[in-house]
Image (cartoon, rainbow, N blue to C red; front, side):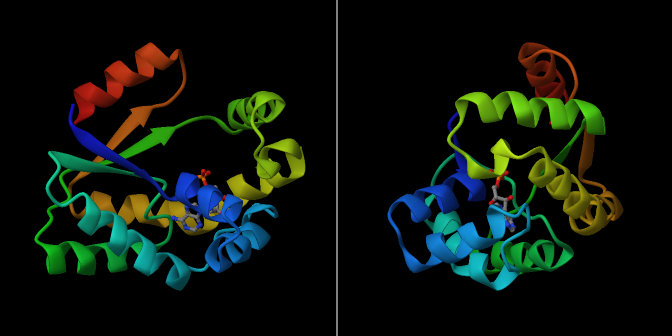
Amino acid sequence: MGYAHVSTGDILRKEKEMETELGLTAQKYSKKGLLVPDELLENLVERELTIHLKSQGIILDGYPRTIQQAKTLEFLCKKHGIQIQKVVLLNVEKNELIQRGIERGKTSDREDDKNPEVIKKRIEVYNEETKPVAEFYSLRTILAEVNGEGSMNEITERILKSV
Ligand code: AMP
């Protein structure tokens, strides 16, 4: 569709591979299932937004994950003349998420997929820190809630319909 895909998780994993200071610091949090502090991501997100300013659009994947990040994103969008059109929230039941994490851990080299306790921690952190972000966008009437269970094709169809 000509949209740029920006995944903060993918970028942080690449930074870690390149052994940059950001990558190595981020890894200390990620391997425990914790979020990386908001301020470490600000420059990275601004850099990515500006790189893709001329593309058809940008799909931000995994950002914002806290209210503070949502506020930062609002600020950066204003600064660069970007408008957030939709925020997609994929709803998946907890046991299914744990199962998916364990399955992915068999083939991925992600340290945070290998340990079910870390997967559970990520879900806990999501409930505490990321869930309020949905409310933030719901109040701005741009939240699309999508059922994230089923086959990849079914979920893709639902996302496309919702946006
Ligand atoms: P992901 O691939 O999106 O699951 O991200 C993997 C890990 O990178 C997360 O568990 C966090 O430790 C870190 N991370 C990615 N995106 C963010 C974000 N927006 N805020 C804080 N930490 C993040």
